View (tube, rainbow, N blue to C red):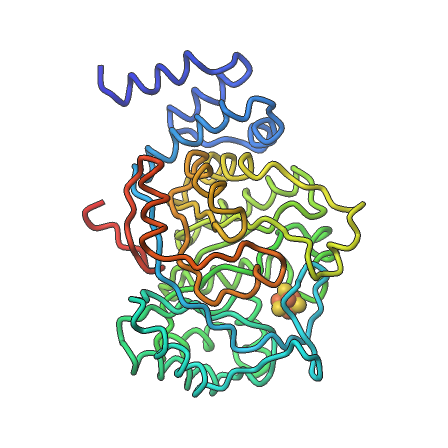
Length: 372
Ligand code: SF4
């Protein structure tokens, strides 16, 4: 009997009775359905669910945990929208508003070069000052500094905004951005892919279908993307499962998602956070475990330590995650919403991963699975 078979048999034996059918499907590599996802989210025995997710993670991604050395560039926090769940945006005249010129961005990157960056993560508000000419200048400057720096830039919401601003298609926007050095998409702005909830937390943003379609177009162009899910605000378990099903369905079709990234909603400095009676916090670990189990076609599940805390991020490595994000230098979106602030280093990330008995591997968002 192989080690794999022994592990699977052990898993089946130690599961509570009501998880046996689901466990059997998992060890036989069969897809879980909506009802099974809901049952797992609501299950009281979180440790058994974690054990299933950890088994699945090991099958798909073995013991390696990825991390990147990332510098965030937020070109501006000026935004035409005012999403109630957002702590980041500003309006002209606000003391908190900023706009970085391409020269300032270049200076900022040059000042961080000694830190062995692997990628530049660019994301900001919806603002006409950030035009295609602006991004051309920013991207070309980055590539002139170091052609190996991976550019992970803009959410589908920003690509849609750029296309409308310039009266061209999203395809044409991607063609231009790729010719200037775009490497991949970070996957923010997904929120919850259920219209009823999306309209309440981010009215004015493109719809779920429009959002997913930008990913579809990117994948057709050969770009790879991550995709997020904001949870713990006003959504129900059923909305979380709907989100996972939509992501899974697109991945079946386009195969372009590299990583799924659950994002825990934070209440500070945003309108929605002030209405505490409306909020429905969730069990963070269960969200990760069920994401790993439902998303059988996405290899990587990323936990962001600045969203959940460093200790919790390490624990979540045992709930299905195989990516501990990055050094997150100069990240501002979650920082402004009350996220964790730590001067993170590569050494500290490696130490956190190793303590969990796993193997740290430095990458950029292009992922490199050679020798894994
Ligand atoms: S979430 Fe994005 S689009 Fe909405 S207000 Fe914030 S920066 Fe603007």
